[in-house]
Image (cartoon, rainbow, N blue to C red; front, side, top):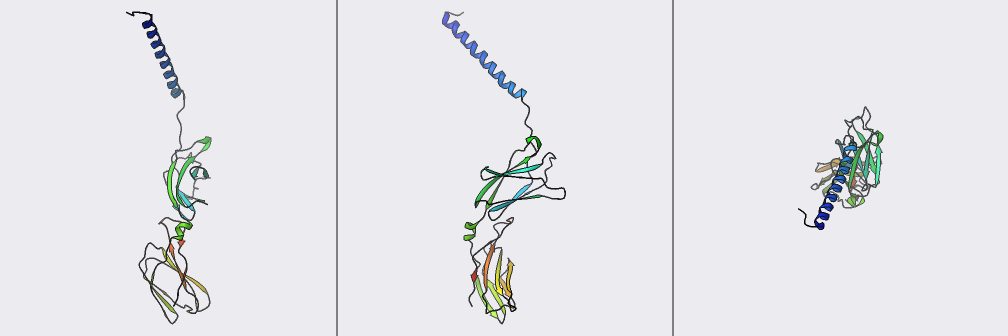
Length: 225
């Protein structure tokens, strides 16, 4: 039994709060009940990104979702994007090059897109971008020995330290300028028909990783004999 008018007012106020709260909860539930579920396209799950000189190359395999009409690739912290088509019927994959990128680590998001603004959830890819800074730090492979025998030049090389190849530039006996490229592993190079009265130089070639689409070079060095 309520003892005074204050108790009565307290009970009435509590009932009003409860009724209002229940009404707001019902409104929130109605928003979920009335709204249609969000439909997404199939997320990109078969792709790889290959790093290069201020660029990357995406290779995207065909999507199993036939509603997909293309892809949108976001980069530069989402400020830039590029739209692409899907691979053709006779193509195993779609190659997309994004260039003019700053050197460093870059995060990309790839979204499948279709008609009526349908899209998938983003697939994230991270890649290193290489450029002048990386190339300026490259060093040439050490030469242990070099010797002319008539017009044959033999060069003995020091240990390798991640080099991809060596390029040797010289002039042959016919006056033609030759660039001889030799990929690792090797310990010596033997060049024939070399005009020893003309300069001979070399530079070391690097490939930042197995999937890289570009090669990088140490500074060219002219050999002395």
